[in-house]
Every structure is written in C-alpha cells, then in structure tokens.
Image 1 (cartoon, helix red, strand yellow):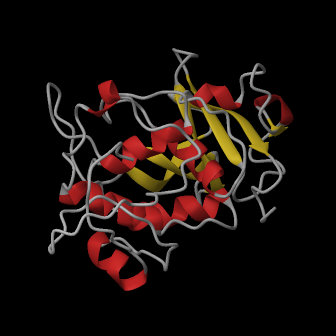
Image 2 (image 1 turned 60 degrees about the vertical axis):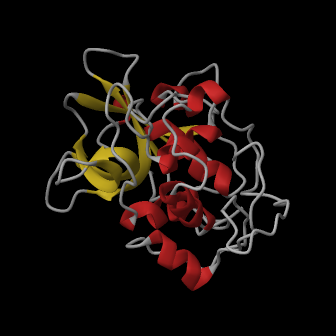
Length: 257
C-alpha cells in the first residue's frame, strides 16, 4: 500500500496474524509483506503487500492515514490478509463480523480506519477519511476478493443503475412480498425514501425471524447496538426510511464459481 521505503520483510500468517488482529478471528492466510522497522536494521525490499488489483491511494487521500509503521496499519494488513479468497462474497463479509473498528474518525484531522480505507480500493473513489459511507465499497471489496466483478463504484445505487448493468434482478416491489426467490448471498439494495440518490447495499442473509416484512442483511457501515459503524448482520424493514428496491443475484454469489 505504501510507495517506498526500506524495512524488514515480515510474513504474517495464521497464529501470528491472529495475534496482530487482537479480537479478530483471522484464518490462516497467504503471506504478505509490509514495511516495518527492522530490529536488526537489515534493509530488504518487500515484494508485495496484498494482491493489488487496484492502484494505490493517491497521496491526497492519505492525509488521515496512520504513519508508516503505525500499529493500526499493520494490524489492518494482518486482518485483511486473513480474508477468504475463495467461496462466496458473503463468506468474505462474514469474516469481518468479529473485527472491531481500528480507529474512530474525528472531523478536522482524526485517523481513518485503515480497514475502511482499504475497502475503497475496490471502487473509483478515494476519500480522505472513513466518514464517507462505505457500504458499497465493502460490497465491492468482498466481490473482488473472490474474483467477481462488482460495479467499481462507491454508491449503493450503482448496483441497480442500468448504466452499470450489474447482476440479474430476481425481486422488486412489483413482484409481491420480499424476498421472492432470493437466497443467502444475493445482493439487497435499499433506497432512501426521500432522497433516491442515497441508500444502502448489503448481502441478503434471510428473513428476520418472527418479524414479518423485515429482512436481515450482512453488510458494512451498518449501525451496531453499541452505535458503531461496522460490518454486522442487521434487520431492516422492507418499507421504511430505507425501502428495499431490488434483490439481485449473479454467478458466484450463492456458490463458488
């Protein structure tokens, strides 16, 4: 992720990654390299950080990032390295359920969560902090992680915008009660009742048990009971301030390609 500098090559896998991740549940992962101050002072050129399907953040978008060698950044890299590379995007999203936010933004100069900033690499947007809504960035990142094509757009409505032509719609409000033929792992798109440019996108988890007219979705930038914006499974009404406008599927969402 960084553009230059010397450091000691560090390979983070399995239990080492779990130690860096703290409370995060980190599966054995492909090794990756990051810049870290070498204890022995031996300079080594790192080969890579993470598979880089997207360009690095421009410098202007990194002014709120941790400094090189910051423990938060190293912790984020360990967590990201452990994310599944196979299976469904839904499985990738589930991996982040136990990962706590790494930093809180403060307007006017606070640190951004390096995990959230990484998710935006799966879109064409490079925000300067994590105050920008990141549900679509997270969804795109999960798709990209297992080799599927997303919208490359940070807007939730890009998943229903005909200009993007993403996926196949299997339910909309004109087709009766949700979720119709939707299955776990499909994409749920919500639209704000008073502002059609705003909304939310997440993975369909299932109907909310015992609550007719509500669905559960797994997604990023969802408010948790302790008022954090994080990856969570949350219940939403089909009709409310956010209206469910589409359920969509594509090859690979329900099973591995």
